[in-house]
Length: 493
Image (cartoon, rainbow, N blue to C red; front, side):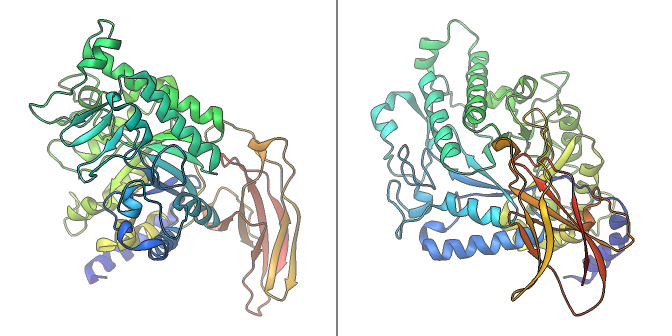
């Protein structure tokens, strides 16, 4: 750690830690399969790499992993619908050897660490420039439902059967895996290339019904988002559906309600009407990719963060943070520091922002210019629960039962029993363990007292032969992280 950075960090710690840290905050990280080298390393090395990353992210109190499982109409999981991904094995349609299921493995590993796992899919992209051939049965049967654009093959969003097919893929993932969320990113209609029109004349002639073509394209994406949202919740009501759109909705020069920016636009260029999805309640959380720096001439981070905050629309707003760009640029008020403090202080000050998501996980793990050290010591010093989503479910589970410390051959263990559940939505799936010094007020709103968020019904207690007295409190979390009342126990250690 550089001396100047360390001095600055230590000078900020007392101020940061004196403020109440949020008990609930979305703290995510994207783990992508594209541009990773998994296809050349095999199962054991890939698991070793992912284990290391998850352990480091857990140390940073990251509580959501968005894991890319469908990059181009393929699968990083066992599927009867789509072929194995070339990003896993090197060749589309070829199964990993030895056979294993990365999505199931990641669900298990994340849950073991108290993290949520959201399966991340790219809905419309079917082939990138590096894919020599498509082995998808759907493509072979219906090549007329795709179009080629700048070296990519795209599921034509204007064809209703494509919407239904992608929803079938999502239903298959959600029904067979214990994922906590389904996530899509910013690829809708393809990013425009100057002088290259989108070749959707055929689908427009079939389904356009005289609409303005741009409005028709937006309607196509709207219908898909609506159908995907209801597919997810009809399959498992507790699974969250989130989107991560490009960082600019519209520029003010094109819309008086747009942001004071000058760049590519969701609404006009990708035909993604994100605000309409929020108004209609078709998304459970929104993570705009605000990857630019504070002071960027065309797309200023602070301007965009405030704009999205003002247009959050009652859904959780999470800021997509670019780790490498954040440390590349100096703080506009303190050139000796990079922008992590400035960005996170702004984020925490905005009333509708409930967290951030790191692009990308490996960059966060690598700790460039002490970015991750700042997260651990200043902004994520304690665990956090997920923001609540009362429009899905607001009913908390019952309290845990039979809370009792027991001496065992493995040490002093705090045991409890899961509460009975009326239905699956009420079932306890995680537990929060708090610790207070005897005489200290039991304040469950203070996350500094959280010692574990776990799927186990036991916790090994630290014992060093002393005679300290504590009060432990244990609460139950359901699938939406609604929290039960606490069960308390006095413990002498």
